[in-house]
Image 1 (cartoon, rainbow, N blue to C red):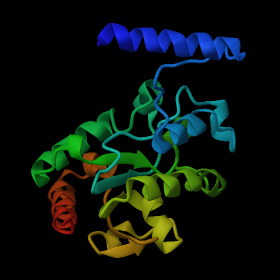
Image 2: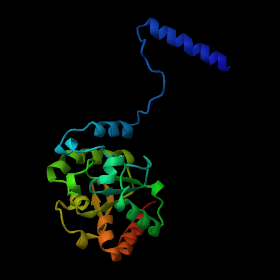
Image 3: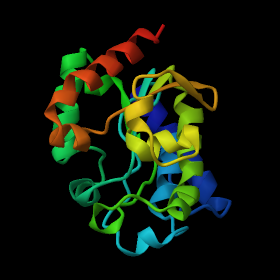
Image 4: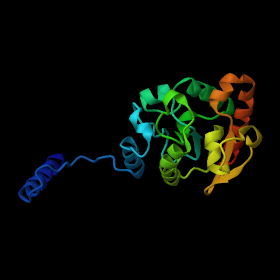
Length: 211
């Protein structure tokens, strides 16, 4: 039976070559909408940040995750590895996730901006505007039940301002059609260790919104 399948494939390839398709690739490529979007981000030159990046940082996690975390922008380690939250902020996030009883493998993590701003500065508004369409497409494709907004830049997506995380932290709100809960960024927690329990509390509340 296996030989029969191989012979059939050879017949198809010969026929395709006869029809002029000598270079056809019969392997099964990864053509999911999310992977196609990631390729588009990798080649993006919509703003000045592409000039200084090493890698774009698209996101990481299950494509059908119920829980999504949105940070601000990649840092130095993220830029080097092309993965979100792998530096000091990532280590702090891992601690917070463990306190909240959440497995990182079960959630999708990304940032508002997909390229590192020089010197780890906050992204400028025009950079956010250039990149926000990618985030909206990620949300549409993954369709999480709840999202966590880490820090002022992520919160600004909802409020339209780049300040107010202390006042708004832990409050449920809507971003597009999604339930969103803003909380402190892990970098803030590193500088203010007492806030760790507050962030873990916010993540626990977000987890209760699922299902």
